[in-house]
Length: 311
Ligand code: HEC
Ligand code: HEC
Ligand code: HEC
Ligand code: HEC
Ligand code: HEC
Ligand code: HEC
Ligand code: HEC
Ligand code: HEC
Ligand code: HEC
Image (cartoon, rainbow, N blue to C red; front, side, top):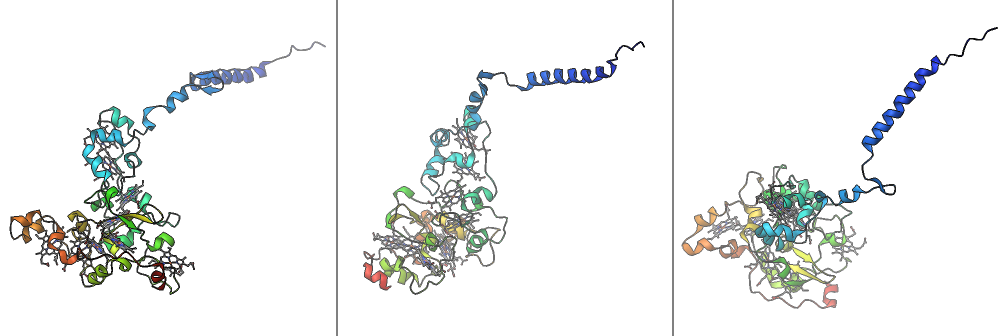
């Protein structure tokens, strides 16, 4: 019996498909594999150059200061002195390479600040943190949409009238949260056997007694005298008479609540109140001595350890 020659017809299609797949794979590979692949063994040589591309570089604040010198000086004397420009603004290489025309991040919204300052139990207590609702209630803000930068300047958040780095060295001041993370209520009572902590009246008895008669008596001393810890036993104390600091609480603004501190328009207020030209150069504290601690009162050297333990 004559056998029919074998037919391979049914395989054409499958080989056709395989050929197409192989050709497609080769074409794709040639398109996808980077040119420099294999120059350094199984690595992509160009990746090294890629990693050195300018857009991921930080240039450092001295470079920023070459063009933004006034702003950099401002920044260097206030609470953010240790925060690098590019921590907030992102890498500046493209911006600098284009002489300032290139893109640079301009942080906005409350989260730009809260990313560092939101109260979190995991953060060390001594780092400055706020609960927004509490902070806003305290500084008389009603509208929750109010931005942090409506009051604070990101480059001089506390408007210090003198350089923080030269501010007076002062014995250690503890806030409750230094030892009790997350505890923001500084007026809460402490148990009788509580470990002794330094209080202002140990050394500034006269100032404290006198201050109890003044309009700001309900405020804690450290609200105006913010303390920057430098070591286990000392830090820098703020003594700030810059009007813009007072205006943080007293400036007239739409966002104020009914229970906010009495508001004034600044500097119009000074012009309205001025009696003669000399008044036009005055700061708030020059006219409102009665609202700040009496100056020139004696400071004692502080209690002995025994006295402190008794207190
Ligand atoms: C070669 C000069 C130069 C350098 C260096 C430079 N800038 Fe600028 N920058 C400018 C100029 C010019 C502008 C536009 C005018 C202006 O707003 O002052 C600008 C604007 C900005 C703006 C505003 C952008 C906007 O969208 O409103 C920011 C933020 C900024 N620079 C941050 C930085 C930071 C951070 C650095 C350091 C990494 C830096 N600059 C370095 C020249 C420079
Ligand atoms: C804590 C975060 C932070 C740091 C640190 C910081 N900036 Fe800014 N910067 C901001 C924010 C937020 C704005 C936008 C302010 C606004 O919209 O009013 C801004 C705005 C600017 C502007 C535009 C100013 C304008 O009037 O348009 C420049 C320029 C600038 N920053 C440069 C710098 C330089 C230079 C440094 C370092 C010396 C620096 N910044 C450090 C947060 C920061
Ligand atoms: C990258 C983190 C970072 C960002 C973002 C940041 N800050 Fe700060 N801020 C700091 C550091 C660090 C200090 C110094 C704290 C210290 O030594 O106690 C500080 C201090 C302050 C202080 C002084 C408080 C005190 O008691 O020490 C204020 C007010 C402040 N920042 C407001 C702001 C505002 C408003 C913004 C947003 C424009 C902002 N910060 C964004 C890191 C940041
Ligand atoms: C109405 C003005 C105002 C607004 C808006 C405002 N603050 Fe303040 N902030 C103040 C004043 C006044 C102080 C100083 C008194 C004090 O310590 O509470 C202060 C102090 C601070 C401190 C230091 C607190 C401490 O205990 O050391 C931080 C941090 C801070 N603000 C961050 C912020 C952030 C973040 C925002 C935005 C969510 C913001 N502030 C919005 C007025 C304001
Ligand atoms: C130098 C560290 C330190 C400081 C600052 C400090 N405490 Fe305490 N506190 C302690 C220690 C230690 C205990 C006892 C530990 C315990 O029993 O958990 C304690 C216990 C307490 C307790 C009882 C237990 C508890 O956690 O509820 C209260 C309430 C308290 N402290 C309130 C305060 C207040 C309010 C402030 C600020 C005025 C403050 N403390 C500041 C160290 C400190
Ligand atoms: C252990 C003692 C001691 C304690 C406690 C103490 N101080 Fe002082 N303080 C001093 C001494 C000493 C000086 C320098 C006094 C002088 O020259 O008259 C000083 C100076 C100051 C100054 C002036 C800073 C300047 O630049 O001139 C302020 C503000 C201040 N203290 C606030 C406080 C506050 C607020 C508290 C409480 C939270 C406090 N102190 C607790 C000892 C203390
Ligand atoms: C943290 C917010 C805050 C800061 C900062 C602050 N004040 Fe006040 N101030 C108040 C509050 C709240 C009152 C109202 C006290 C009361 O009457 O119970 C007040 C009252 C006053 C009054 C009296 C108003 C009246 O009707 O009797 C004057 C004046 C004043 N402050 C001036 C200042 C000066 C000057 C500074 C800066 C050195 C300053 N304040 C800083 C919150 C603040
Ligand atoms: C040239 C002097 C002078 C200067 C500067 C000055 N004030 Fe006054 N201020 C007055 C006088 C006068 C009054 C009305 C009498 C009074 O209440 O003491 C007044 C009233 C006030 C009141 C009460 C307003 C009210 O409606 O109850 C506040 C709050 C206040 N000033 C805050 C400030 C702050 C904050 C500054 C600085 C930003 C400042 N003042 C700067 C002279 C001044
Ligand atoms: C409303 C803000 C505010 C409050 C609250 C406040 N102070 Fe002051 N304090 C000031 C200002 C502003 C000065 C500096 C005035 C100047 O330099 O002209 C000052 C100065 C001082 C001085 C230096 C006095 C001198 O003769 O050199 C001491 C000490 C002091 N304060 C302690 C305290 C104590 C303790 C408390 C709490 C009982 C307190 N302060 C509350 C704003 C405040």
